Length: 115
Image 1 (cartoon, helix red, strand yellow):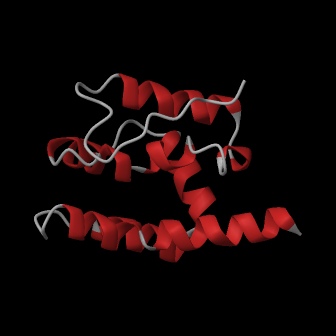
Image 2 (cartoon, rainbow, N blue to C red):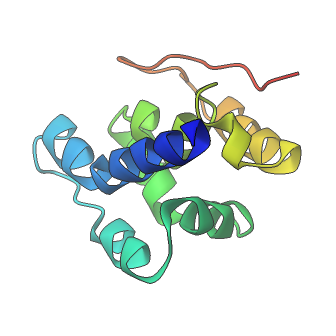
C-alpha cells in the first residue's frame, strides 16, 4: 500500500513538472511534449521510454535555462523514487546529468544512485 501511495505522489509530481519548468524559466520554455507524453503513458513508463532513447531536446533546453533540477533524470535519482526504476535506468540518468557542465545548477540537489 505504501508503494501505491508513493507511486501516486510521483505521478502527481511528474504531472506538475511542466508547470514548474514554465515558472522557473519565466515562460521562456514550455515542454508541451511532456504533457503529450503523459497522455499516452504513465509517468514511470514515459521516463523509462525517454531513458531508452538518445538524450532529448528538452534536456538540453533545461540545461540552457539552468534547470536540470527539473529534469526527469534528476527527479528519478531522488531516493524516494529510485525504486520505480532499474539500476541501469538510474545509471543512465546519472550519466546524463554528470555529462552536463555546471550540474548541479541553482536549486538543484545532486542525488546518489542507491547502492
